Image: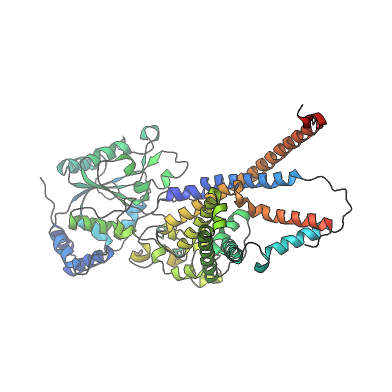
Length: 363
Length: 218
Ligand code: SF4
Ligand code: SF4
């Protein structure tokens, strides 16, 4: 069997210094909340492991997830993803095209059967036989099932692969579903987000390589180390939330003072992601620091919970029409029943028999 | 607890609860009004309106010492009702909801005031429940409906307070439970003694008006 080089050899080839590799390991250890000192242990293991073969399938998606990964400026943690693994098939990033590309995928699948990691971004359309998204004439469903068969584990990158995402939003014209809706017999790890934080993907891969197993997952299949807390739990505007100080518009006094964005629709309280701690763009910041509420992009159905600017307590559907119809129905019921009551009363009066002495005598 | 459940209680669940609540309440209130009574042929000895309004006002602020129901019940009852209404109408998150539904809102009370009101309301409810068990007369009078309505009124307060103060479960779970508990209350309220939220003042006005008509100064 063809063997991949170790990460150490690879980094050496790429001119990445030992020092920045250690820095990377330390950052990973912190991100995954591992005890101090584990950075060196991680480094020792990572340096020696063979880079695993990775097949990356892109289905019904916008390429935002890949963009998110590749837009990181090197040498960053994120760029190390590509050094950690041997990316044998990625139809956006690979040089090969056409039959050669498909051949590369098939070769990798055969050679590393049972060992390769399958990364998937994008949802899978099922409606009308899956015709809405095909690669080389084959449906996404077909390709996923085939590739999943020999995979050691599957990583669903981004909210589309993890939960169905935008394509799955109502009315879901293509019948889009998540990877986990189709594949039931392989370990699946969901790295949700629209797009997901690149460092989280790196972190999960580092964990997999170091420990040889997937990290602990939450009930949505997401790694707890990164999705264990909500944006709201770690938001720097939290003190204002607790004091009830809210910005009412994007340019009022409150907004200028950096008050909580809850009333402007922030979904941070119900959103599990690492934005508030890991941050974006090499740690430059995250959306709430830019003055915009969280959209809830790492949660299932985040497109269907109403406007991004509707506050959490507001109804997610129209209730006024229901209330009006119900008021009319209730009033009608009251009128009908009390009319019936009165009719009964009048009837009783009309047919009332006067009590006579003989009644009293019981005759 | 997941997002889809939250979406359901914020959407379909809320629509169902609102429909049942509005239908039930409009039926109850209108049915009562339509019962009517025969026009009195007697000469009025006082104003119905004055008497009605006076009683509505007076019964809302009765001196505990004048009450036959006992000091404890009256005070705890007031504390609960006032606390409950303050949290319901003056917590900013609730005003967000009213604004979304009715198109207008009003200023919220500071979070500290809400906290105190909520704690007092919760405490009063617990005290009232304990009293219900201890007091022999109350115990005798209590039935299933009393415990049902107590539970249904208590749960929204409790889950709401936990949500606000980040106690126990996570936000998503508590928000879902809080909204669901309110919806349960809305569905059951019109068909139990909780319908008093709309009928109390009508009844008070009615009693007062009868007395006012007769010229009784009560
Ligand atoms: S801005 Fe959003 S996440 Fe931050 S405290 Fe306010 S509601 Fe929570
Ligand atoms: S702040 Fe919220 S919407 Fe923005 S990227 Fe993070 S999880 Fe997604």
